[in-house]
Length: 220
Image 1 (tube, rainbow, N blue to C red):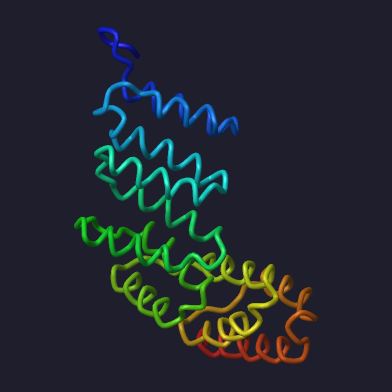
Image 2 (cartoon, rainbow, N blue to C red; image 1 turned 45 degrees about the vertical axis):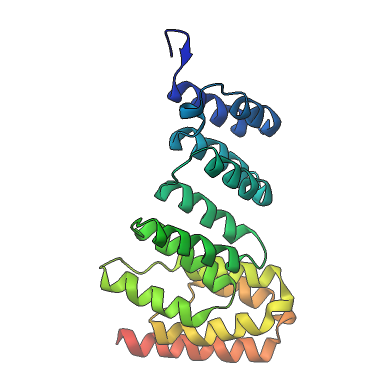
């Protein structure tokens, strides 16, 4: 815990995490900013704990500001740092530009984009309607041998349903899925049909019917 009067990295990290889980963000930030030792303050484990609790609590703008503050103090971000931010981008409306900036920075630092980062980024792209980039990422994941994850599409679909103004993106996604070897499962299909009045019952029914037929032909 405490060695020769110096609080350990693990102690600070655990304390910040605890405050974050207790939704006491003010105290979590107070603990971080009160760390007297600069090397501890810029330690990536401590920084990730502070950033993650902000992102999980929906304080995405605050986490970005703190991220810049931490880098100024000497933080060298790792893959976990960027994964946390990209996960935050999924929750924030129209955040794909921020996601692209994060990916550029990640690549600039020479960090490897693992399956967690790639799938998280894919969710951001699909939510933003960036289907060309989504297709490229799907191909990249498949070439690396990662199994298909239907949850990626379910995330995007649920977001579009929550934002009816993105009707065109939902229609585009549903038409696009079969060509990538995907089809909505029964539970997602029921959710779409339940909300089809927002997007055009006849059109949605027609698209889902074609999607099911294409899915059956691929399996046969």
